Length: 316
Image (cartoon, one colour):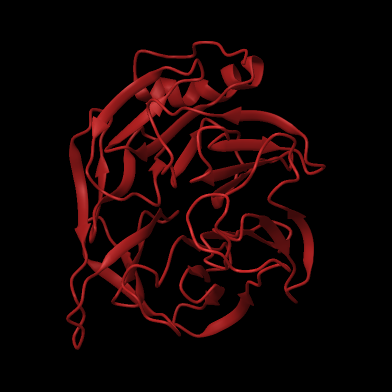
């Protein structure tokens, strides 16, 4: 693939220059976590930096100043500065009446500077301030409680509601700030039998990611549903990308989605094996315009990736 080096002398400069270089050269920078490390890979395919981390990471963001927001332990999230030093953290503690484990699979920096964290086990969302104090707690409805599977990605909408992917329930629920469910979408098997496994052979309804688009639709990364779907407020499917629609590519655990202002989607394809890319950019008519495959820096467990330097208006 034709890529060009767009490295700069500082991480902030790297981020700012990434989009123009990528647009010209056909490549992007990718921030991800897998194989015991966090890394930023340049548009030339070479690591800008790598840092060790022994944690399961299902959400990761490169903040505007070059800091990295991510889970760093089962029940802890942190911000690293551009040099990898921890400058902020929040550790979830058991709520009254609960004595089991807590896991964090979603963390989002909000426009007001607060940080949104999903606490499985505790079955709640919290908004945390710069001092690491909980300012708002939102209870979640979970039909099949499980400290590992209560939630995957969570995103706050521009309307102030919260889209929560309940992996174990196979359901996306939208909550208001008091914890009332205001919208629900339950995934189905799309006409295929359920099967076990994390690779392309696995199929189920364990949803991973969702966000609300500017048009009011909801884009859903269907996890081991092996697909991407876009639904309207009534739950009607308006658009879908199925497991084997892209030539030479098979989708496995579909995790993250970026929507670019031009409508293109960058789809995260986890557990699909080295014969398949880990990230794929497609047009809405399902033409592949870019793909990312790096089984040296990352591996088959690249669930969380942030394609950085994309234009303003990109949603993820």
